[in-house]
Amino acid sequence: MLDRTAKLTEYQTYIDGTWVDAASGKTLQSIDPYTGEPWAVIPECDRTDVDRAVEAASRAFESGPWPQMTPTARGKLMRRIAQLIEQHAEHLGQIEVRDNGKLIAEMVAQTKYMPEWFYYYGGLADKIQGAVVAVDRADHFNYILREPVGVCGFITPWNSPLMLATWKLAPALAAGCTVVIKPSEFTSASLLEFMRLVIEPSGLPPGVVNVVTGYGAVAGEALVTHPKVNKIAFTGGSVTGARVNELAARSFKKVSLELGGKSPNIVFDDCILDDAVSGAVSGIFAATGQTCIAGSRLLLQESIHDAFVEKLVAMARTARLGDPALAETQVGPVTTPAQYQKILSYIEIAKSEGAACVLGGGPAGADEGGGKYFVKPTIFTGVDNRMRIAQEEVFGPVLSVIKFKDEEDAVRIANDVAFGLGAGVWTQSVKRAHTMARRIKAGTVWVNTYRAVSFLMPFGGYKASGLGRENGMEAIDGYLQSKSVWINNGPGGGNPFIMKTAG
Ligand code: NDP
Image (cartoon, rainbow, N blue to C red; front, side):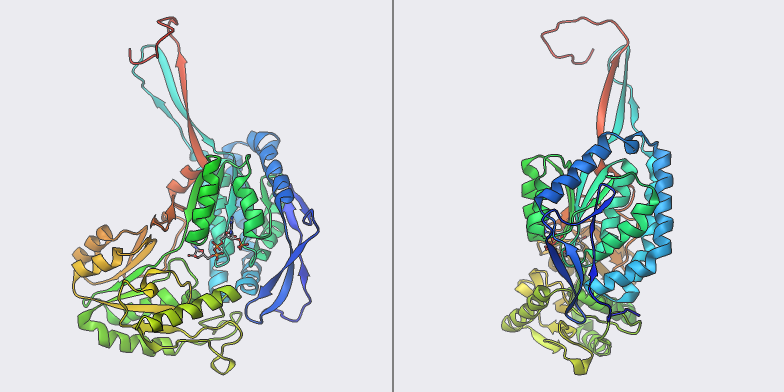
């Protein structure tokens, strides 16, 4: 149970192994979305603090114990981090609920799952291997080294703050990089608790992981434009992602982006109906719809449309709104006031576009278990895929139901969108499952399940949903670069005025 009576908790940030205030002394307040009241005070860092953090990360990368450490020792240290997370997972999850208002069951499930990333990438740290290349020259010995990219800047959103930081931090540490993290201004506390309870006692050398809290436009941009940052890994909305990408390109930084989605959840008439209904609910109402992989477009085959909608509305209607800190709550508040207004405005847009609201359609008051920033689970039928409600990310509990005729029609509608993050397919046909998995343009396709993630499976977007992949073996490649080494063991000489090509 969260203690909501305590007075404001004051945090410092963590730079170069030391707890510090922002150089300016400024702070910002973090709001509990359930009560709408401030509960924590966070340093408001600016360019000066970012500079200090990047310099610390740069020093830690170039000198001191971190670059001297063997990959095996790095792996051991990461396993220690995993064990510390295991000890504190419950507390870290509770802090996340306080900041983003998502369900305690979901946030604690995430924090309890996070150690796996540190075990997995810790195990990979000493399996980063280059190659010996039998090059087409006599007497040459050529090889490829895999080296860390250097100082990495992470920018993370408010919806799953620690898990999304973990997806970046674990492969970056395994690769030997150093890091500066800028969390969302709305959810900085869990990362600061993570630094206090996990990173500081883990024995990681000072400067390897640093945090700059504050506003995206100030601290975030200072990080993205800092000349000593070599890579930016960003999770957030597509508009911010595009700006981050443009700014980072000016100094040729490597960039990975995990952005938004408008994912199709496609139900064929040969599905197990009850499973698909539950999958549709989980796709859009879990996490109050504030998830990049929300199945916000429900594509229903015409032949089952009416029966499915009836069951779906019946199940969604039973959703228990309330305090996200209580185990029995199923739908909590929206995380930020701006997001709350955005969701309500999209509900109005859908109505004005002619979609039929068959459930919800506005704020949820205290009599319904709601409160200040609650939106009723909302379902629109009769949606045309060209409507704004079908094309733009709402990031809230608002579902658009779209009819389709057959497989061909389903593929056309599913892919007719700027995004490509996830997709669901509900069918009992093996052939159809594989065909759909191939034809849908998205980074993840779930068949007969939805919203499943793992440290073992690559995650990322097609099209406007992002660049690069997190999780799985390939994520570590995003934190490494190749160096080609040429050793000539034979005679020198030759024509010095022309390039040494084959022979
Ligand atoms: P934003 O894009 O608004 O913010 C993401 C992060 O970027 C925050 O830390 C924010 O700081 C920072 N930021 C804002 N402006 C700038 C800037 N000019 N330069 C550098 N950094 C900046 O996203 P939200 O926090 O609102 O998160 C929700 C969005 O994230 C959704 O659109 C969702 O789809 C997407 N998302 C994608 C995921 C994926 O893996 N594909 C996963 C989770 C979310 P501040 O908070 O101070 O504004």
